[in-house]
Image 1 (tube, rainbow over the protein chains, first blue to last red):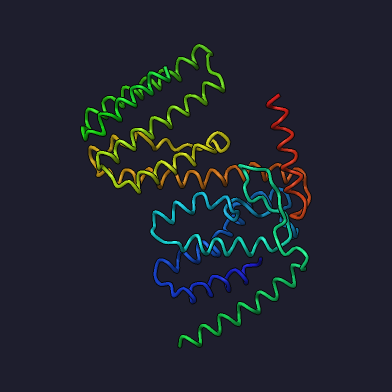
Image 2 (image 1 turned 60 degrees about the vertical axis):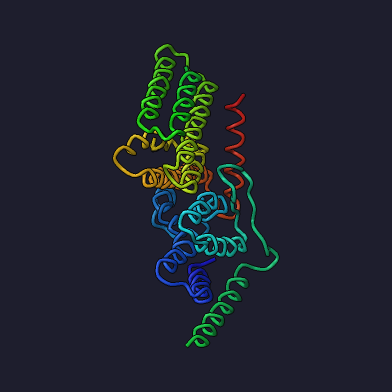
Length: 145
Length: 175
């Protein structure tokens, strides 16, 4: 999913769970910030592709895969909060609805999967989700005022 | 030698469980010296084998488990942080060979307990090893990215091709 839907989903979650202070930071870090692996992969992109715009480069890393739960869960126990787990799970669930290949358990398993809802075009899923998220965000925002 | 070192660590754990920190650290130090000698002898005389390295790692983890649990038994730190520290160490170890990342903050950190409180020491052990694990995963991802870039291809198909190549190369290496 694109950054837009991730931002909308995370903001909705923050509003719905009425998070404050450091928990808001954790929500955005694990709901959106895990996409920072794009910055980690940028040097590889520049080396392999250069400055051209190549759609479909493999920007993903374990930061955005279910395998990251192995370190996120202990972190949640340490911080006494489920916020990282919840928002990371939302991020992963959204990404797994997009049909490109993913490796959920790498490096422990070479299993490759495309995710779920594969019979619906990605663009349709993105647009529908964006509309729903905008609507829910607005509803919650005005309901709370 | 590995087993002698483990026996020393087990002895250190028994002493630590009774709350006698300084004598326990002395026995633990003896165990770590034996562990270091073990690796050194293997390297100098070319006696190192993959099985020996795996045994060494397994006994190191077993030593840490006994010593950390003993610290919990003695009430030096809350059980929660001790279990978390052990979990972080196990996670880091599970990929250390592939990532090449091992910060070495395990038993050695316990010597600083003479100066700092043990709950803080175990928190540092947890944080450093968990960070090493997360970063180690990224390091492995970057190594895999090199394989994917060599294959070219797009997001839609490159992962399964690269993984198939990696599995083939691993099997070839094992034979």
